[in-house]
Image 1 (tube, rainbow over the protein chains, first blue to last red):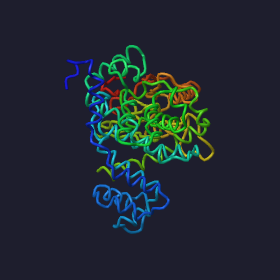
Image 2 (spheres, helix red, strand yellow):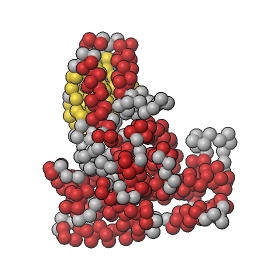
Image 3 (cartoon, chains in turn cyan, orange):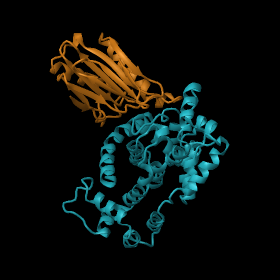
Image 4 (cartoon, rainbow over the protein chains, first blue to last red):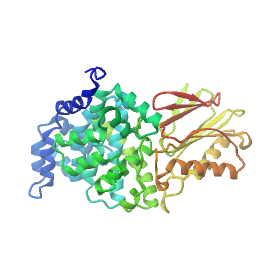
Length: 290
Length: 155
C-alpha cells in the first residue's frame, strides 16, 4: 500500500493490518491455561502440544542443551517438560511462538532481524534477573510482556515503514521522544499498536497494559508489571542489546526506581547479572531458532 | 586481516598490525580505547559498571577495567608515556534520572581517572541518544565509530 498517496488513511491501514496478521497460536494459550490450572498436570500439557512438532522439537532441544547439564539425552516430551518446570515451559512456549513474528528486518527502525530477536529475547532473559532481584511474583507475565513488548514495531514497519524515516527526522530535529514523533506522523505509536495486537490475540489485560505503557513514564509508574517491563527494557537498551535508532529517544520517569523499591545497588546488580544471563540467551536463541 | 570482537565486560589487546579490534553496540556502556602508535599496540576495554555492585561483584568496575587494559597494553610492549586514550559509547536517554544515568557516570569516572593519572584524553565520541560500535585498527591506530544508521565517523 502506498501510504504517501493517502496519508489520511495511514492509521486505518495500520489497524486493518493488525487483524490480517497471523494469529498467535491458540495451542500456546491453551497450554498456558492448563499450566495455570492446579487440577491439571504435565501429561495434560504434553497432550496439548504433542501435535505441534515445532514446539516439541524446541522443548527437546532446550532440555538437552548445556543449560540443563543432563548426563543423558532426553527424547520424550513428558520427561522434558518435567525437567524444564512450569516457568521454563511457559518461556519456551512463548519464545517459540513469538519468534516467527520477531525474526524480520525493521528498516524503519534500522534494526536487523537479529536485532529485534536479540532485543526481545534479551529483555525476556533480563526480566528473570530483575524479577528475582526485586522479588516480583509474576515473573512469567513479565517474561511474556518482555518478549512481545516491541511487537507493534512489526506492523508499523510493514505498513508505514517509509514514513518512519519522517518520524526519525522529526524526533531528531525537535529533540522530541520517538513515541511523540510516531503520533505526529502516523497517529499512533508502536506501544499502542503492540498492545492492540496482543488484545486481538487474547493476551491477559495486564500484559497488554504493560506493553502499552512501556515508553510512557506517566503510565508505567501506575502499575508494577508495567514499571518492571519499562525497567527491563531500559537495562536491555543500556547494555546495547539489539538496539535500533529509536531506543534511546525516550524520556525515563524520575520515579521509576522509587516505584520499584529498587536501590542503586539493586540496579547495578541487575546490570551485572544481566551480562551473565545474556550468554545463556545467546544459547537459547541459537538452540530454538537455529 | 583479522577482526577481534570484544565481548561485554572484557578486554582485547593486540600488537598484530593487520588486526582490527571491535566493540559492538555499546549502548550506555563505555569502550576505553588505548593505542601506542610507536609500539604498534592497541586495545579496547568494555566497561559496564561505574562502581562495584556489591561485595560479591564479579564484574570489574570502570577504574579496575582501565587498569587491566593498561597492564595488558604494557605487557604487549606499549609505553604508558606514549599511550593515547579515547572514549566511546555512554549513550543517554533524552531524559534520565541521575540514578539511571549509566553512560554519564561511566564517562565521568573514566575522565576523572585519566586526569588523576596525568593522562590526556586523545579523542571521544560519547553521549546523546546514539547507539555506537567502535573499531580500532592496530596498524594505523585509527578509530572508526559506526552508528545505528550505518554512518561511519573516523576519529
